[in-house]
Length: 300
Image (cartoon, rainbow, N blue to C red):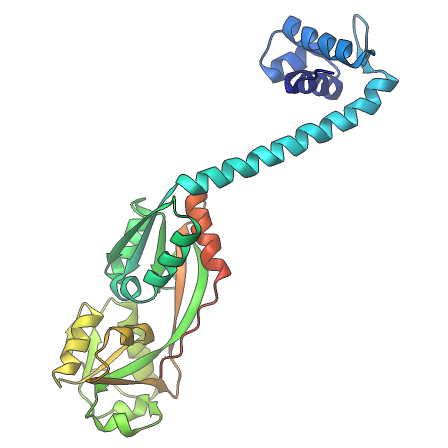
């Protein structure tokens, strides 16, 4: 028996629509071509599948039984083809990820390496930048995805929480804080403070921590980069307030840090994309990969 997929599609469309004209339009063929496909199927099956009159088309008893099976065959085939298409798209895609410098140099490298091992054909492009530049890259379409800490007031974003981490105090190994097992915001009252500049979400978190214990934040130095603050700490110029992941950039023979408590001030690290916009199968694969991971931070 030689039955083709085109014959099955023609028969199922006629059986579903009950009309040769509409079925031909749905299949984008002429009515005569559609009729020929159905007749060829009936010849191959050696039975009449459709009863035709000048006005109506209906399934015969044999046609009714065959119709259900033909629908399942086509549905299963479409599902398989769709799955292969998605797999192929993931194998050949490109994903542009925007992230701040600290996350780009600490959190993301092992994540990118693990994803690359699963999808070696996907090109990953990392745009390492300042935290305040991540959202413009995502909203402007220069990046498919953004990773970082963003204000809850930012709109038009789809968000996926990756992990939370506490703000920490970073200081020289010789500092008195190094002998303390626990460090509170109140303990910073007399220390020269180093922070990121106003406009940074980390500056906002630092201000919230000081405000919670009734202290003003009057930085001794400000900078745009976490690495710059760590350099100032190493030079003995003060205590830096930074997110926990930034401690991965420190020279541990010269630098120490403690999580700041009472209260515990945490930041959320999110994966974001433009709300209402679709992403490529490759980008969706990266989103799904991150969603499946459990990242824990233990900075203290």
